[in-house]
Image: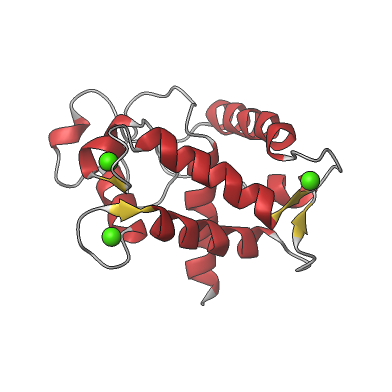
Length: 165
Ligand SMILES: [Ca+2]
Ligand SMILES: [Ca+2]
Ligand SMILES: [Ca+2]
């Protein structure tokens, strides 16, 4: 896996972990952590979420499975785990910053980093101060379950879009 790919993956993870950040439409190219949802973006075939969706839908069948999201989460974890210790320190977790990307102002980046910081402790289920891979993947499994609103084990574009990443 190339560094660029890992960076992408890290960006996805950051977006995933920040799924609750309420932001307005964030057009912009590619992976710029833009949340991209809102204000009619859903009808735009070039909406950022579509690119993100396509990247996670590795077999290209138009739906995201838990395995596909899990694979993404594993790549993200590997990208964040700088020393390959199998667990993320808060520093490692936070070091994958979002932006600055086009359209992102410093205040927003700071706000997202703050949101991210608040996610760390809940993911650290055993409270050892580290988020290990199992904890990280469990966090993503929960996100998948939340997105799969009809519980059929597949996240459709509509479900994905509605999640407001
Ligand atoms: Ca798929
Ligand atoms: Ca832990
Ligand atoms: Ca579904």
